[in-house]
Image 1: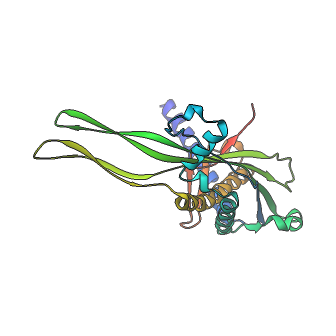
Image 2: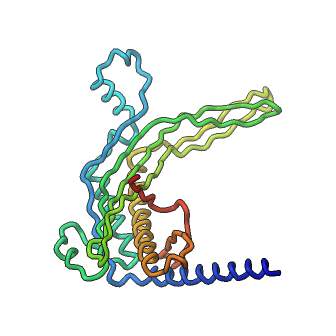
Image 3: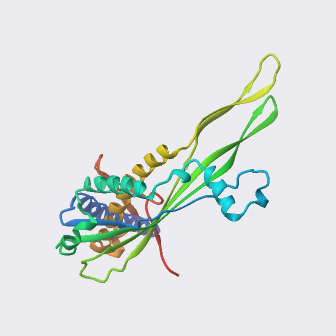
Length: 277
């Protein structure tokens, strides 16, 4: 009986803590008066085509010639413009972050940003890597007791981003933190096995919408919106930690959807902080 009462008491305390935490998080989600963000960024992007094409006499080519051949075989990297990438990202990022009610400063408004009397955050998109390669994806299906396989060669692009985030006018000492995010793009493809009912021959039908630079830039615009949300959520959780005592924090990381005005918790859909050993 005593053990049951203790468990009930502990559970009640946990619910009370979670209730306080969520209540404060809900309030902070819409209480954005005085919040400001300035986005700055690198003007360079590291990019590479990682797949070595099958070219006769490859070993006899110089390093420069090999690099040229690899680049010419790419779907995205060969046409990538750092300026266009950053313009698309900035526009998408700042427009989306403004929807959360945050004051947005451009890098030309540095003096006004530094004199901001509210809660000001500097976000530096410090490094971007775009790596393209080809991968083999195996599809398999059991047909009449026989396992058939088909290897698909698809194009993939990984976009890795490192953000340096710091609060510039905090009363306490808050050092800069490095946050990481990664996103993968691939060909859109749909494949399935077929069988000729007369001959019994099994074949494979494949439809591929190949990745290209236009689809890549559409993804960059999406990332601007996504990472704006990640930025807001990062600030939200920092403020939550400051306003809720440690013993009332569950360790949950909260995200906020400004369109549905919905608060939820997540484990993976967020920036990953990179801490030094």
